[in-house]
Amino acid sequence: MTLWITLRNLRVRGWATFLTVLAVALATATALVVPLVSKQVERGAADAAQVFDLLITAKGSPTQAVLSSLFYLDEPIGNIPYATYQKLADDKRTLRAVPLGFGDNYHGLPMVGTNARFFEQRLKPTLPPYFHVESGRLFAGPLEVVIGQAAARQTGLKLGDQFRSAHGSEEHAGAEEEEHAAEYKVVGILAATGGPVDRAIVTDIQNLWEVHGQFTPESRGVTAVLYTAAKLGDLYSVSSQMNATPSAQAVFPGQVFANVRSFVLQGQAAYAALSVLVLLLAALTIWLSVYAASLDRARSVALLRALGAGRSTVFGVVLLETAVTVLLGLLLGVGLSYGVSVLGGQLLGGRLGFALPAPVLDWALLFRVAALFPLGVLAALPPAFGAARQSPVAQL
Image (cartoon, rainbow, N blue to C red; front, side, top):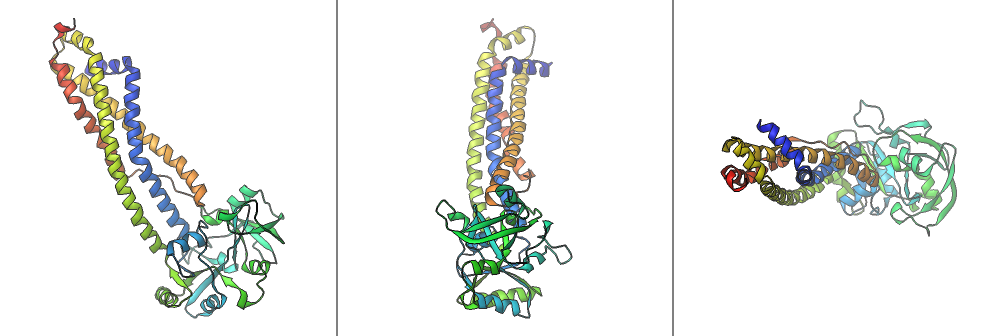
C-alpha cells in the first residue's frame, strides 16, 4: 500500500520528481568524473611508458624529458653529444641503447629518428617486440619511414606515398614552417599499441642528421636514449654515472609518474572537498524539493488521514518518496559519470597521444557518492514528521 501510494505521488508530481532526480544525478556525476578521468590518465600513461626502462637526456626537468621524449607532448630539453650515446652503446653493461632524434614534423605529427633496435624493445624478455609492422616493412634505405596507425588515419598516407617534412616540432607547426627538400617514402605501417608511437612517423636517425646537414659525428646530437641494461644492478650504476656527467641525466619514467601522481592526488584531495560541498548542496536541493512537495501534497495527505491512514503510513510515504528519488538520482549519476568519463577519456586520449583505459568505478568512489543517500533521507525527516502530525480537518 505504502509503495503504491509513493509511486503514484511521484508520477503525479513528475516534473518536480525529475528535477530532484536530475539535481542528485548531477551532484553524483560531479563527484565522480574528475577522479575517474584522473585515474584513466594515470593508468594510460603508465601503460604507454612501461616498455621503457631508463631515459637519458640532456640536463633539465625530468618531467619535461619524459613528456617530450616518450609522449611527444613538450619541447625537447636539448641534445646530448653523439659521443655520449656511442659510449653507452659500446658499454659492456648495455643490453640495448636506442637513440632518439626530434626536430621535424609532418602536418603536426612528430618525426622520430631512431634505429632498428627501437623495434627490439619488449615489455618482458619472453614477450614479442612491442613495436612491429602490421603492413609493409621496416625502414632500411635512405629516407624511408614507418608510420603509426593514428598518423596514417590523420594524414591519409599509404604504403608507397612520399612527403616532405617540415622543420620544427609539432608544438610549433604552422603555416610558416619550412619544408625540407628531401622526400620521405612510407614503407610500413605499425600495429596499434595505444601509445604515443601510434601518432608518430619513425625513420632512421641517420636521415634526420643528413636532412639537417649533420654529416660528421662531431656535428651530430641525440635528443634522448632509451636504455636497457643487461642486469638490473647495471641500470642503477649507469644512471648514477650519467647523472654525474655535466651533459646528461638519467630519468626513470616510473619515478616521474610517482612524482606527478603525488601532485594529482593533492588536486584530487582538494576536489574531494569540493565534491562534499556539492553533495551538501544536493542534499539541500532535496530538502527544498521535499518541503515543496509536502506543501503540494497537503490535501492528499489529509485525504489519506481521513480515509484512515495512520501517522506511520503518512510518515513512511514521505520518507519512501525521498528514498526512491535519491536512489534514482544516484543511479543516474553513476551512469552519467561513467558515460562522460568514457567520452572524455577518448577525447583526452586523442589529445595526449595515448589510449586511455576504460574508467573503473571502485568501491572507494561509490562509497563517496553513496553518502548522499542517508543525507537525502535525513533531509526528508522534518517534512515527514510534519506531514504525519498534520491535521486532516484543516485541509478538507
